Length: 128
Image (tube, rainbow, N blue to C red; front, side, top):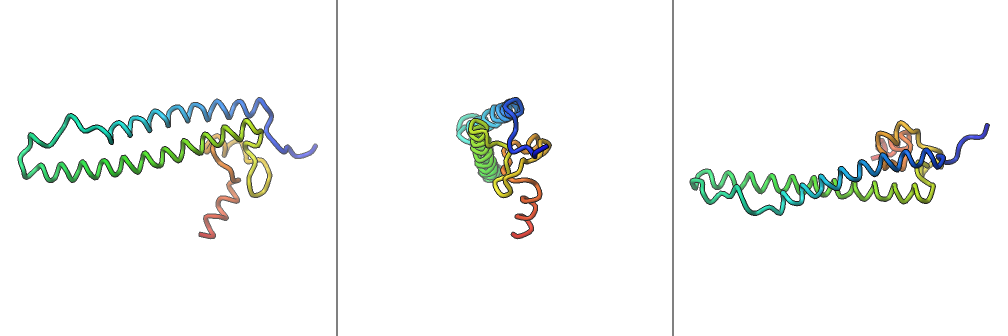
């Protein structure tokens, strides 16, 4: 029997459902982070003593920076998931972009936006 060169339409639909669920959660998390970053009302430092005001402002700045970094990571993740959906529509999803072979289902379930087989990814990491 010849080696499979792509996943079946049924398998692609299974992956699409998984990706859509992850995408929905990531988009909700992203919006929550964005609203937290943009939130300027409530819990202000105006009612605290000057000693603690400096500490609170520093902590707020740090929290906003961390939230901003998390939001950027989530935005990249969302873009990768959306690209995976395009690959599903093109029926190229799950094909390693280096070897041209199918990426194992277990890897795609764990990392649904993967474009490289684990061996290729590990070799890339070793080169860096």
